[in-house]
Image (cartoon, rainbow, N blue to C red; front, side):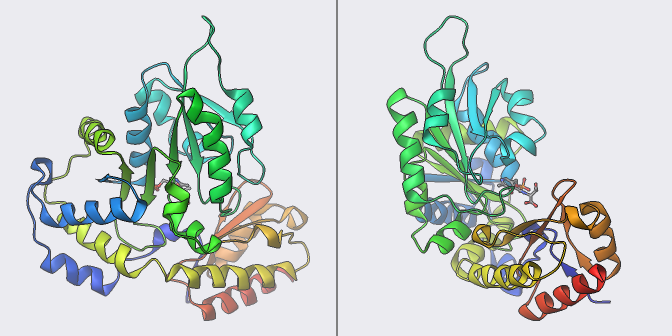
Amino acid sequence: MKIVDLRSDTITLPTREMMEAVQEAELGDDVFGEDPTMNKLEKMAASRMGKEKALFVTSGTQGNVVSMLTHTHHGDEVIMEAQSHVFLYEVGAMAALGGLMAHPVPGHNGVLRPEDVETAIRGENIHFPKTQLLCVENTHNNAGGIAVTPQEMKALAAVVKPRGIRMHLDGARVFNAAIALNTDVKNLTKEADSVMFCLSKGLSAPVGSMVCGSEAYIERARKVRKMLGGGMRQAGILAACGIVALEKMVDRLREDHANARALAEGLAEMKGISIDMEKVQTNILVFDVSGLGGSQKVVSELEKKGVRCLPRDETHIRMVTNRMVSAEDIDRALEKIREVLL
Ligand code: TLP
């Protein structure tokens, strides 16, 4: 049975070109800064994000924690959207490893309102921790792949920058946002002091994410990465795939977006499914199945038919289009979903 795997874009396998690039990669010890392939990837990533330097990290989670630890001191407070990945899905790393206090603020469709961030910022008071960092997620995963616009980034920066608060962008899928908004990715990263983006999601590299920022910032981040055990030796093996990902795989994300739209349009016509088409902007769909007896039941039924997806919560399912799923697979998935709903 052919499986249509819509659990995540993290399931994408490396391309043949990536595997070939691995064979050819010139290698060295990256902890000594001597891996030419890694040095090339880090240079490319920094330039793509409009930052001075970049650092390869093992995962998006490691990238976010390295970024947060580099910006802060123990006991500082970090503001983030209440449904964000850094708050919900990173094993409490900021608290466990950084001694940081999370201050989650509910956004609107995943996008923080500047006035709510302003209210959340602590003033000078002997009782308060120091608000040191704002984290923004783009695209916003839990909200359903919503793209935060350059104007929204600017409005948030206008609130935090004058107060000396730093801004970190969890841009795991920032290229998806740039494509959806038809803008250069630099317009989305400009206001951020640090950016993390993933090579291993829609871009299909097997491993790795990048942290980008100023030269001084990345120098400190490199040390934090080492402390977390993330200093890798002949990491050019991984960087070779990352280079192909950046050079060849970014524009292809459009196909995932078109497939997500086609999937959403099909779902919207089905009884018992409620999906907000305005929120279908990139490659993530989150939709309500409360009318069908809850998400776990539907996910299990679909699994039996060869369509894989994940419950987002008790009433919502998440589906993520990705390179392993073709337009024909989407038609097939819709057919199977219809069968389950009958
Ligand atoms: N998200 C994964 C799961 O962890 C939920 C997924 O399947 O979507 N930031 C954002 C916005 C993310 O969506 C993710 C991964 C990460 C960070 C962490 O990346 P990894 O999985 O590489 O640690």
